[in-house]
Figure 1 (tube, rainbow, N blue to C red):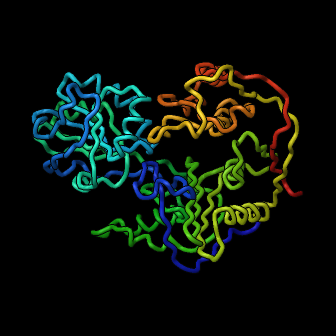
Figure 2 (cartoon, rainbow, N blue to C red; figure 1 turned 180 degrees about the vertical axis):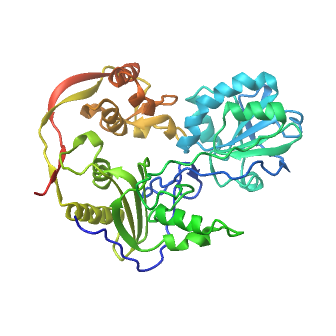
Figure 3 (tube, rainbow, N blue to C red; figure 1 turned 135 degrees about the vertical axis):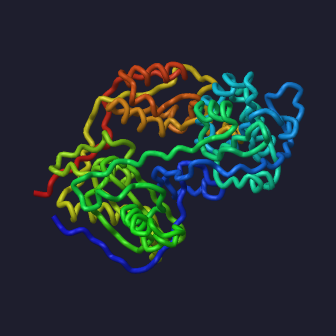
Length: 444
């Protein structure tokens, strides 16, 4: 096996998209998630008086009289800043709706605040059942007043009108605590475990990183500078170097991948992934089950790639990583497109759950999932192949409230998939089809 390649040339700044929706970067189609768990070291939040909110419209409130924080004084108010295009926001709505109905008679008020257009909000609400209040604002002043940087953002205001919590998710434990104590104590989050058979075993994987950065180096710098009075991003600037690294991963559980492309700058960070998933990512293969690893290599690897060259893009960078992996690990990646037994989806009758993209109303995109995105999820959950007939090829399915990622945890994932599809008027037929699959083998 060859030595790991590491070239250090120059600094590079790249943008990140986290698991929340950043207002400026969410629509960057060349970005993917590159974020680890964050650690909150504070014990309590500094209490400040909550600024007044100026709502233009209110929905789901009897009489539609616009509420103010002044009118709600003496009550606990939960503000949920969201947008119709923010998938993580919409994913939290069913849970938040349950919490609202449980605590609405205990002096707790929910207002989901958005600055989307009136048309988008009303289209969205036509296609969804919610009980908590939906408030619409205009302009950016309220977002500035509450220092909102990304969606979803949760603000909890106590009975005195003070902000006692800022975060991205609402839990029943938070509500119970503020009901009991009129404040919130922030608990420190546990850090992921590290392997003990590495010189890096003392490094904690905490905080976030930009695509193209090395979290091992970042955490090392943080540990080295932990006794300094003012830790800042400057301590880890050198983690943003121009580099191409392939190494066995020191992390026990990661499976994190992220990439970003802007102009000629490309940053890619893949942490703790085995070969099947790495080749799936860099070759845009729908699911891991379409790749069979028949090599002797079962290790998890990290890949750190950061370059700024004329004509460079993610596609070119993925090709470079692909070729380097084959050479570095002495393996081959082969296309073996044979006939396989597949689950073919067909629609029984046209219905309101299945629509074409041109039928999608503005503001409702997060309520639907393209069929072509569901197929890889079904494959990874069931370990069986899926295809769809031409009538479903470019269609969208209504999936609001469906915990699709929970299917793989079910005792019988295939049964869960069948029930889900049956509700949407889609049937499964077992057929033999020639589909594209791949194989990883040793060169010798």
